[in-house]
Image 1: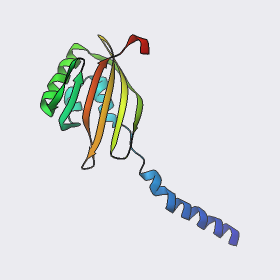
Image 2: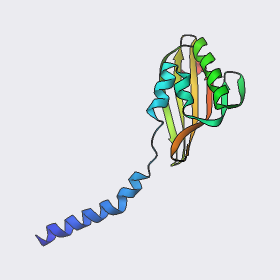
Image 3: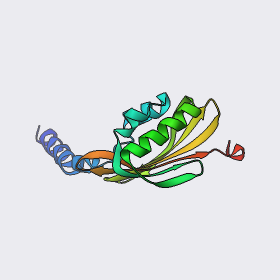
Image 4: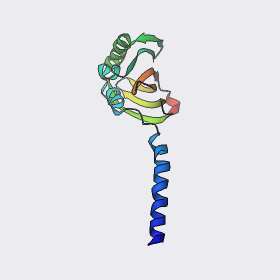
Length: 138
């Protein structure tokens, strides 16, 4: 019985000591962002934009307000209706993370890059890039 109690306390202490380490792990890209891109919903995606966002869509690149970026993205989704979207790579740390996705549309395939930073506990997109996917990378 004494051995059992000792093992129990060792396991308990290990949980107490190491559980906070697992709690610090970064979350992935919010599911709402992924679903918004998949649906081509610029308004929903814009809810996750920082007040000023670096936006690169095809050859057009600049820093835009949240409202301007939503309009540009809406035009892109109108011209290139999404048929599928999936995240192919994610990385980062606790307060800053990035993801690369593959977007298939009615008018071609694109790579989508996100840079997301936490602002007051909320994940916000600071940079969004949509670039034509090279046929060689498939």
